[in-house]
Length: 121
Image 1: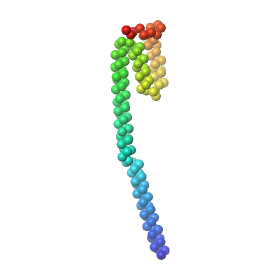
Image 2: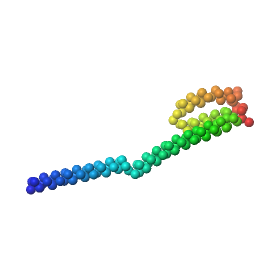
Image 3: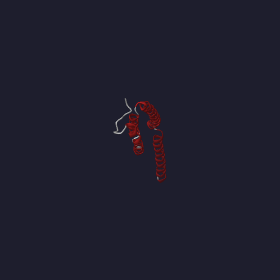
Image 4: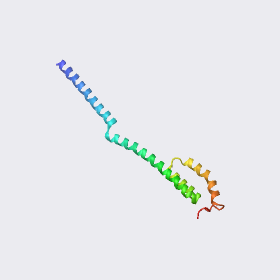
C-alpha cells in the first residue's frame, strides 16, 4: 500500500511536470510566434519604411516648390518652407528656430526697409 501510494505520487508528479512543460512551451510559443504579433510587427516595419519614403518625397516636392516660388518671391518661398518644415519636424524645433533666426536677416534684406514684400508682382 505504501509502495502504491509512492508510485501514484511519483506518476502524478511526472504528469504535473509534463503538464507544466507543455503549458510553458505553449506560452513561449504564443509569445514568440503569435500571428497577430507577426502581422503587426511586419505592418509596423512596412509603415516605417513607407513613412520614411513619404517624408523624403514631401521634402523633394517642398524644395521644388520653394525654388519655383522663389523665382517669383523669395520671402514667400522662405516663409512657406519654414512653416512646412516646422510642421514636418516638430521634434527638432530648436534647430529649426536657430535656422529661422539665421535666415531672418536675409529675408528682411529681400523684403525692403519696412518689411513689405517688394519682389512679388
